[in-house]
Image (tube, rainbow, N blue to C red; front, side, top):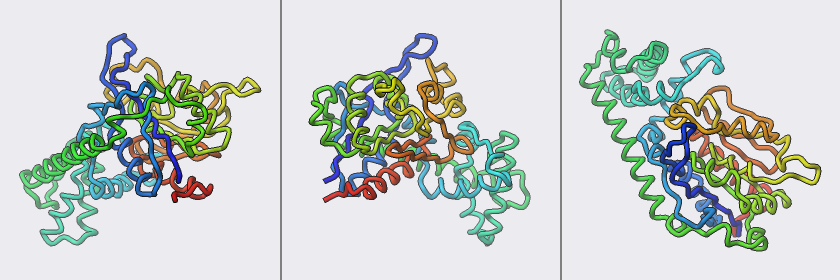
Length: 343
């Protein structure tokens, strides 16, 4: 049976550039979704932390705006695609994505169609208003309330926005509960306790993100052992968002170069980092620059916050929280394609 080492940070604090401590840990969706995908695929998943301490969910990662329901997320993606003819011209910041009420677009579309609008007209009205909100940094509710064609009251628009936020918070709370119900997240295996022979029994390793991996996975001798053993067999090595920090633990090859020198990879970018809570406060170092300095061929997506996954040989990396499902699916596909099938 395929056996995955699910390597999760157990860090609870990170030191910012000014020397102050800041809460950290793993991001809930990045930890939960791949875990459940791997279990559904029939794989055995063993949760590991460097010191055997239970992993801790980053409070910031439990914020409602990181947990849009899939229907809202998919509809918003269809709206954002109308903002510019070329995706390279669309720059959707975390502030715009989370603080302007754009995620309520699907709910407002439904209200318009209940009034007799066609699906095409409803999408056109909502998309035009969302584009204005994006360009002018205004609330979607305010833009639509001033649109005579919309025909909805401010109270209706605000109720839809409030309902979307409440559903997002409920989803965040549910994901946290599901993570807490996983035995491995309560009693993880201590990575440092495992021998080389035991590490060799794994068929792959996966590390979810959150800023925590930058604290305890980026310079860790036991992570180095795990990466070396799996890489020697060309076993899948996968990481998401800040999870690729673990790759910085990899040792040099016989030629003196980093184990992953010349590999194409991605991670949470500087552009995205500078929009986060920790990034605005001041990160001690930046992950994408560190990977490039180590020898990575960095490959980021066409725009910030868009799903982007890079596969190079046995290495699978995902750029950001929006890449969670795609990177999990890529790992499943790779394991099946290489013959490491579940029993």
